[in-house]
Image (cartoon, rainbow, N blue to C red; front, side):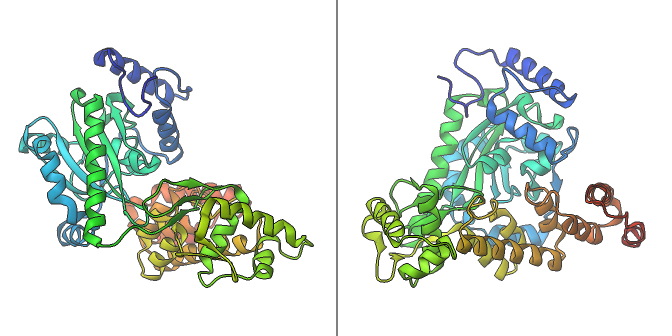
Length: 427
């Protein structure tokens, strides 16, 4: 079976496939569906790009340069592994046929390296340091899509959503913090059709894994347990260096609540957090905990119930970023509501508190980059207050799209058009 993350199966004609993809892309932009030979990962990306109103003829936006770019590079954890990345992919950057690039978790290019002639060609599509290559800004592309799906991927020719990029082929792999497993960036190689091979994807994936191992060694401590619960109905638990464990919905609620209370909860407290005021037989909770202990072993302690050692949840990373004023980092780390289908009172409270804190920080922080990131997410695209806040802080030349979206949302919500306010913001 064809690896769905590879662009071409063995024996495929690159020129023929490029033509097929170009016609499929044109059909999609004209309002048609997506069929063969478009891979599912690409079709899903095209739909996300269309939903984010990415302009098919648009270019990546350069929003960081000079001292700001230098500071961002110096502060980013991937700076520590760039010598290793260059050692492993140095030939890629020097052979005059392709580029090496590394972006941060928001898709902003921090390093783009290679032969000067290839770098000059890439400037034509703004593939330069400081440019934002996340999908909502630049359409389907290997680093942006790798970040979106958290998986190594190749993007070939007209699989790219934006026309200026369709002469290129790229392969990228996300890089994770070895302790929290949070995505912190991606490593990419970009060049011509010759990159549409299993070897190029394996190369960037191996480099990303080597970077993670190097980061773990630099920290001089073993990875702790980590919970991924944002935007998920079932928690993914990574117990240290072991394989990930997917928990059922009730067990997911229990571990999230215990992670949020590292000092532990009594049986009565945990029952209240799970069931509220409902009259539940105590045997029900004990049975759930017994089944969970089979999965977690000694990590689930009792009297009071607690997780040892206490795992780190992905929602906690969002809260910490908000507390430190890193709004772009908080939006990037926020992968959706905490256990969105859970109705457990304790989870509901955690979910609302996190979303309210993040949204309040965005609306009061007046950071245009963070606000634009937020309104391009599925959970922020219909947030009228966020669109209005973005409209208020953008320069006049950039207000047309948010002004139109504000009008659409006010109409959809049955609100009167706030023409006076919009005109005041335009001045």
